[in-house]
Image (cartoon, one colour):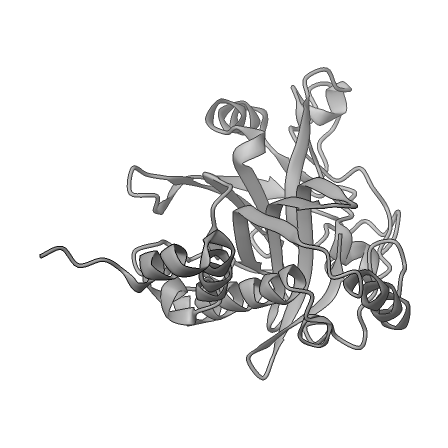
Amino acid sequence: MEVFSDTLTQYRIHGIENIEKTLDKDLTNKEYWDSQLKNIDTRFGYIESYTNVLACDKSGPTLSLYMQDHKKRYILKKEYGAFTGEVKGDKYKEGDLKTPVGIYNLIKKISKVDSFYGPMAFVTSYPNIYDKYKGKNGSGIWIHGLPTEQERDEYTKGCIAINNQSIECLDRNIDIEKTILIIDEQKISENENKEIFSNLLSQLYEWRYAWLYSDIESYLNFYAPEFIRFDGMDIQRFNTYKTRVFKKRESKSIIFNNINVIPYPNSKNMYKITFYEIYKSNSFEFTGDKVLIVKLENNKMKIITEK
């Protein structure tokens, strides 16, 4: 005799909407995420979008390339000697000669550059949303080569520089859209604690569940008192705005793809969460990248900024 799930019975009696809500709730279950992460390499975090990790250790300084193998484990493929900012510490303002600490994308490759930068350069996404939240400024942080016609200094103005053979090697080995850059003051701390990531993922979906079913109290409980949105909206104005929106009680569809949860370097209990969001309601539609900077406070996820 065949055995059918209770989910099928619920669908037969109540229809698809009842099943959707049950499945949405199941996605908040930590045990589900424990099983999902069981055989996943989490040394740099929970990563769905990136096949390559570039890890810059400013204390070396070195730039290391990790690439996924056929089992999706991150394997060290290359370690390049590097030059970083003349002044130690995290970058905060234009012209401070410091290399930033953080998590960045490579947003484009420049093939024709001044000879000072060697054969090419990769432009990073500094300043990111967390940098701006902390009041950092400046721009033009690149990974580039070394001068071909000028004297070479043993430091940069804030960029990461590697020798010209190395940057050509890097170019051959990476797809910039599939590469994440992590810069830290020392060797990147590899985090195998899957409990942290399954906890954050289950809470990410609790946040989504509250959003999806217009539970304003539960939804706002995920935001820290010091929350400031990317556009400057503080927690008080955000609460008022979201309360007004949730009162409409619109039916919604919210799908998250390509989720990444990465510990933020040189910060305790801070994480950068990114995903591709597909949102649809009667009054609004959005499809695109979403970024949350969150902290874990007594094992509770609190959002401090988002975009």
